[in-house]
Image 1 (tube, rainbow, N blue to C red):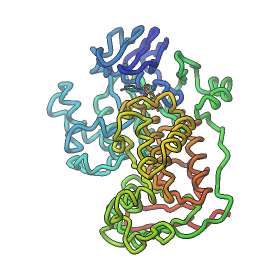
Image 2 (cartoon, rainbow, N blue to C red; image 1 turned 135 degrees about the vertical axis):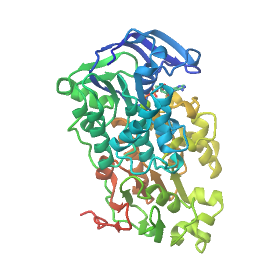
Image 3 (tube, rainbow, N blue to C red; image 1 turned 30 degrees about the vertical axis):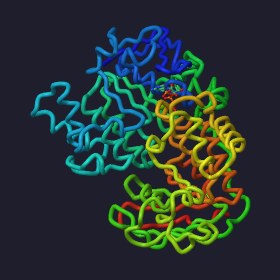
Image 4 (cartoon, rainbow, N blue to C red; image 1 turned 180 degrees about the horizontal axis):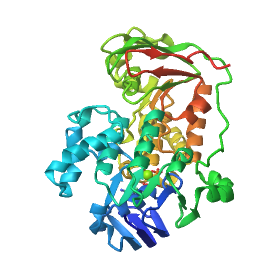
Length: 483
Ligand SMILES: Nc1ncnc2c1ncn2[C@@H]1O[C@H](COP(=O)(O)OP(=O)(O)OP(=O)(O)O)[C@@H](O)[C@H]1O
Ligand SMILES: [Mg+2]
């Protein structure tokens, strides 16, 4: 069990003018369960990194102090378990079980205890494979489970979880929350960062909201915090329980067909799927982790050659390439017609600044500099990235990076946009902007396919859904039109 004390704590990352987090005074007693909230970019992940002793002294500037049981966190690392926002950055070993064992070995756990603890941790998080499973073969959600198993196996006094369910299907997310609840000893201290408050509340007894400009905005028991500050928090971007957002469904019927998937074979066991995307409609692709959703996104995006079945682009999308499947189009033609946003945004960035990153696509499609600037400024402004225009894309927070990767696809306004988890890591305000931008694109006659686990997103935007099953079955239960 570990207690945390922050006094006037602040951290400014090297190379940034603004403080990532500042003026935080906070005392967390051993055994407390805290939900740490705040808009995207407010400094939540930075604060967790500080507590985990993962901010090297030469990587930025510190103000004030942070202590775990009276120690500098850099000297208290064996008391802390952390699951990062992007689980891929956490996995170090080639085989899943080895990855969990690695942390135990590091902390000098006796050899005979290691494998029973590994298997126990894997079981607790519902890890669906044998411990020999290659980590490189795990879906995003499966990686998240493995990272959590690694943290739980350590039986830490302080457990830090940064959006541990953001990549999970609803059943997986519920399982993880149960695993966390069960795994916590009465005296384990928990600090959980999670934008979606409603689901997280059963795990916590205290809510702390960071103020982006610095300091703690509110601190207290969940009911009291939301009763007294609900409106102000919602306006500031916090997902306040029970406060829905108006939907943005298509007002006109869909137009011509753009792309058809014809008996496409999808892993893991080659389920077949058929799907047609039309102009002016938003289709949500749902389904459990590992059902092949990301593979479907790559196939529809023309980024992968279908093993079985075909992706057929209609004349309206393909123009003079109508006889050629999208995966064989030349890159500039593909980029003009079909835009893709991958599940993991970090794989997409190729320039040194946020502004350059956004300008790249419009420039390639032949826009003049004035038009490029207008497009870029509009997206920077709407997605809350303007103050980060000069920042390196690889230093963005999780939510900022996700918005940038969606924005780079929106910047070229392709006729068809394929997105994998576009709303991942967003606060209520940035989420609203993303939904509005998608709705505007759709209402202008573009097609949208979004792979998503976000039920609010489906409710607000999807005109149709396709649900992939893990087994050999593909169902389109509600693929009928909305009334
Ligand atoms: N390694 C880094 N180098 C420079 N700046 C960084 C780095 N990591 C984060 N930042 C910046 O610090 C600020 C706080 O980032 P942080 O990741 O702590 O936010 P967050 O509250 O976790 O946001 P999100 O909800 O989007 O994950 C952001 O403006 C971010 O761009
Ligand atoms: Mg974060």
